[in-house]
Image (cartoon, rainbow, N blue to C red; front, top):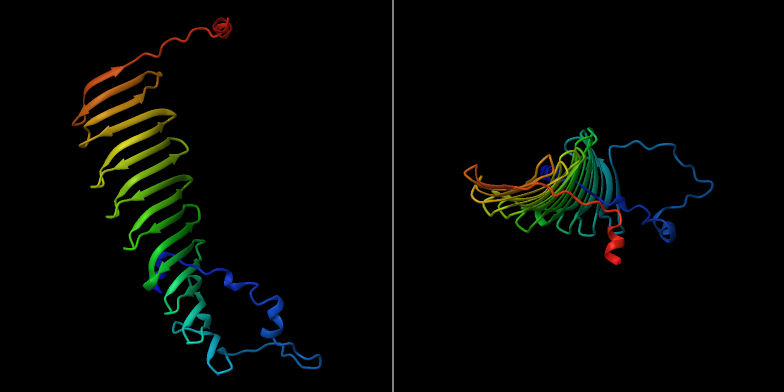
Length: 257
């Protein structure tokens, strides 16, 4: 159960509508018109048994005193349940061995999470949301290592692809005030390439090792700047002045004449 809360939590809408229509006559009893129906039933547990007297569904309490609604298959394996924890409700669907495959939870602070797992609660897909902070979507490989992450953090979106050792490989970032950036890391997790717009001005930074490489940007006065850096010092640079554009009036007529 604890592993579920770490990864994220799901169900699929508790099979709403599956027992309607043509199945209602078979599944739900139709009381007779003169049959007295009790106003309420109070009990510590309620269980449904099949024709072989095997319990297949029930409403009860777990060892922690939390209310639980569950269903079982013909072999008696738990296949789905709803638990009312103090921190918030949780829904889950399990495989034929009883391992959680899909889980969903909602918490008292407004956060929510969805998880899809392989056997033995190994994460494969996780979706989470925290109000006022971030929403995230993550993909995991067969070794349970996160490989792709999509996040919106305080209004700023980002997409990151990861190396096998949990280090970033490629990131695409966007900030409403600063701009957008595409960045790449080497196999040791060191940032080596940046391409993007900073404050609406183009930027290219390629370097190896740290603080040694090539930098291109546009200065505030509109002039492009190209420099070579070594150990954080500029060893060569070139700054160009933007050429003055000629008057465009009548130029098209002259070209087509």
